[in-house]
Length: 264
Ligand SMILES: O=C(CO)COP(=O)(O)O
Image (cartoon, rainbow, N blue to C red):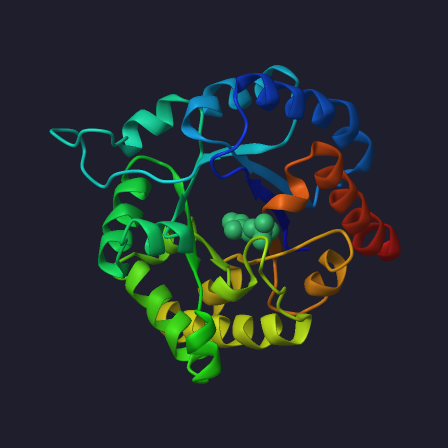
């Protein structure tokens, strides 16, 4: 069975006290609700990465830790930025790149994301590349070509071995956040299928099949299982519904019950 990736980014939320409280609830609940086929991950703000990754290690929780961004340079005069090597020292093993909030608010381009992907891999970090269509692109019916293009540029120049270290999250801009409308499982499934085809064409069928494709955008405890029933959805990238650790554990529990217990 392929792993099911279930993770959350806290975005710019949670001072250290709240980060610690989230971890404490996770430690109480996660072991009872998780199956080894589920790969949990959490992406705190930079300031809490070390605390969270140490907590997971000390409590032997199988939850990976990541960062929300990084700079592609090795070091230098880049005031306010953090390099891949610095992130690796914090205990992060994942790095989220190209979230639509970074593309929109910080003008991140596909080409810049590609440089970050290469730098992350050089330092042993697994990139979680986010791609997504805007509401206008959806209305113009160019969603597929938009996200395939974004993905191909982000992954350009990777070897087969490197691309197998990469995760891709389809996060429609129109689905994210308070005013977002979640994609239906069919809508998300259709885009994921197009992404899978593009991965197979670019990197070979066997490799393309093995790259985890996650969906994100208003995922909650009610739609999580249905989304995961789509063939090409290998995981979920959750925002608000997982900021409360109990909300996150509820989703993990539902997925465990649906997919794992039913298979026994
Ligand atoms: O942006 C997201 C995850 O990266 C999704 O956020 P929401 O689940 O709050 O819509």
